[in-house]
Image (cartoon, rainbow over all chains, first blue to last red; front, side, top):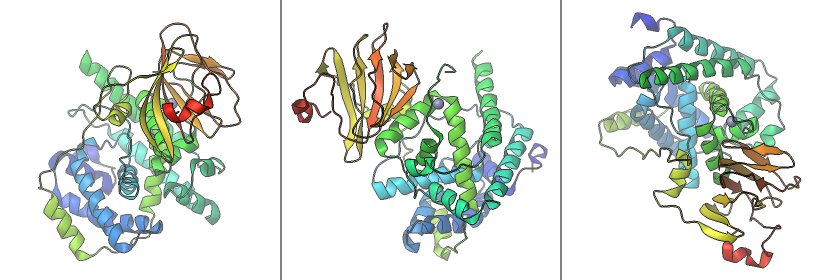
Length: 186
Length: 211
Ligand SMILES: [Zn+2]
């Protein structure tokens, strides 16, 4: 483990090893952690077990192939996999391709900023706690929203989670990237 | 970029992350996020919540063949999905919707032009070209409309909308957006209902123009 990565979660470690070294051992660990959760997540919205496994396989293959896009300064592994999963589910059920924003261009040689990565992980941990502390019916609504079972009109009627501090963290991760890109151009 | 003052509402970003926004609106959200760091950050926050929900899902064991099948595919050659970059004023998601074709502006009268990008039962998304001083085609009042400015600006009773700004209007908003002086205003406009022009096109023409 490179010394600058001390304090990272296992998931982040694995994902960086996959991104930088196409590390299959790390990918096997990531699979063992996420595949059963993914299957449970996909089945929650009514997909049968066989089709859920097809989607899991599809999502994990996409994770492997798009690993270069993973940036722990801006996104948790789970957040990144969540968006890939929802996009794949929409592609499959609606037979249409999801429009996605332009990717931020990343300098592949950029040095990791461990304090930013760990800071974002800590914020995500707090968010997880906040979610766990909600009343069961509130938590269920949040789950439904992110499982894709509520329209945006239905979501707007709900009280949201406090996202201010995690946004500040993500913003720092993005500004860092913009900064480096500017330095690169000069 | 920091000049953007009209953003995507939080609930819409959450619905976009979850994939429940109709396709036409998703094109507008993806385009705005391409132009706006504020909303890119907010979207990432929603993705973080989605990730927490995913990680906290009850684990369901996967069949033993799944991992083998997956690992057998890791070295298989594959064609990467095409990446659509910005072209001039048009963000990547607009270029994606164009699928490599050139713009085909169709005249709607009074110098106003449109190019329909996609249209289905759930809505449509189009580019609109409005000369200074002309009214932006009134594409709401039957449902929800989202209008993202790509060039120039327009103003209405609720304020001024410049490059990157999004106006969201529903049937309750009675407004008359007019393109400001300067460059012609080019917008990306989505609606979840059939458009009607109550300003200057007889309704009988709607099937012909598909508005
Ligand atoms: Zn915005």
